Length: 402
Image (cartoon, rainbow, N blue to C red; front, side, top):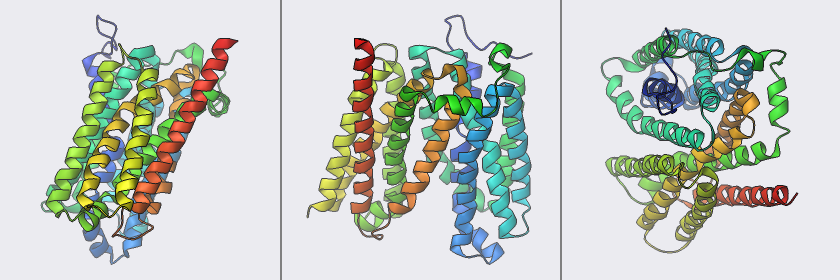
């Protein structure tokens, strides 16, 4: 029998939080656990580097469109059935990837793996909105973002460790086991959180059509996506910037990446604690200008003839500030479309991955020996986020005056 969703205090129970956190780690685990195996994939299939890269691109494309599909389906058919269907799809495609006879089959399997894995990410957010209200939604979203920040730190090291004994195919079998465990946890712990009355008469595309007509949702969803673009720009360029520009060793880069991730995790945790006292909107209004200032400082240091290692400090500040924004902005966006939160969550996830896919290649457009393109992109994304916040504030004041 499914476990109670809420504890005696009216907050999400520990069991539900743990399973939701498990769902939130789908994307980082399915990408980062696999990255250390790229050279072995290339050798096994005698493939080009771009061909191997397409196995990651396929997964990310699947994640983007899978969130649109499963988010909308969860509004029409409830949360549990689409979630379990997505897990079955991800499980089957992981097994197919593990036995892939060619690079083409592996790319296709990874595309389907992304489609299926998207169900956990998008529906987890919708379930949180179904069960929580106001500051509790922001608190839980921030906690999920914090958990999601831990996986990218651990997954590459675990993936590298697994390459020796089991190889990249073993990594795919590992992901299959994780999806099977996820499916079991959902079946044992969760119950349906979307009432039947809310599903009756709803069309699959109707929810998506509704969310794009809500200005408050669009503003905060765009703010969420542009903030993620700041983070993704840093992640995409970090290896070259820290090693080629700042002169860090591979070990030093790993440590610096860990320190930055620790800042992101810490700020996400602090944000979850502030949700009940400060509130998500006030936190975002404070954090976005700080993020812009940090990104401008990264750009200034990148342009000036100063020691390159000085870039580390403003980058850490920018990355840490993101932790105060993403959980709260997603909560503010979804709060505006509670009646179709699955479709709202789908829009968030789709925008997140599209923005990430756009900025990733642009971050290295100037070559491997400069931090300027990264700094320009980070600053531009943060500036757009600040502009969106100004527009949201003006709309809020106009609504209050009416």
